[in-house]
Length: 148
Image (spheres, rainbow, N blue to C red):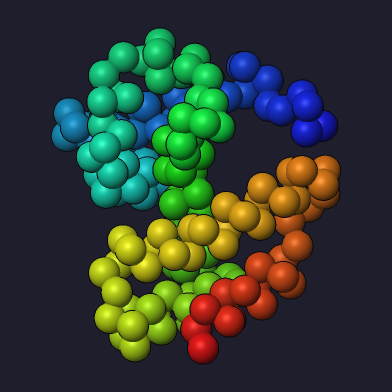
């Protein structure tokens, strides 16, 4: 997949469907798996995006433009990726940065997550622009700097 092509419409719909299903199952108090629990928690943290979950076709097919601000689906996906990194402590610098922001800087957890998300989002953005894999070493270094 090149920068110009991006993911196919079918791939976007399939990935977004996972978020849609997790949120609606959680709202209906239906059984959900561990991934769906994490997705529902991330969505719960963002009431400003809840209205996107009112219309499935719009949610699955909407194109979010750069000048519209952060793509909500991308934002939720980055949150989910970061939560996984923190849970597994991979890279350890991200987990250390989170602890530092919470304990030393006394930041609210969601605000601290957003501070880390800025670095993750930039890392992914520059990798996509270059058509390369993310620079994991640079990412870890930036997280380490955040914890100083």
